[in-house]
Length: 201
Image (spheres, rainbow, N blue to C red):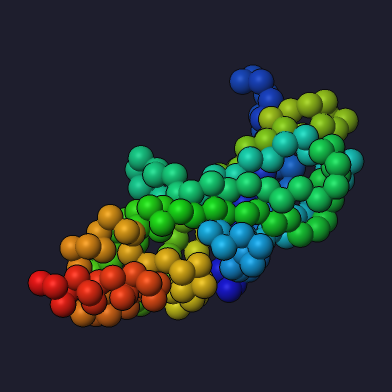
């Protein structure tokens, strides 16, 4: 599932009296279902260091995925999949970030996006990166932010692969017909429970 082309530019932050400088950029790659972690996705990035920054090494990189609201709401937990030692070179290559989403996270995303707005719009998420970089300039803080955009059809496929739909706290209030109308994937066991509840009523 490939998002629209976009990138996060990472900047080295010095003291308040010094200007920041670009360290490199993370270009969004595919968003895929994490086969090894059923409750999560993988966000891929292609990293390209800025000129003169190929000697840098990352000490830490922290990712966060949130809403695009004025007061951002954090969605799940995003964690870098380390490849090699903790002190690793910031060179050209692919970085994978595991994005863990619990049912309540998916519920919140669906509601924030607007579950009654139809299936035509893409899904946009605010992604922030913070970390530490070591290089000729010493150890400095780095950060950046950007927008991850996923097509509606791709998002629906990913949700189906994770076995999620509308969050569990709302499902008892909805009939199966309503769920089908909203095009929400409901695990088979939950579908049976809903049908039994309707029969009792």
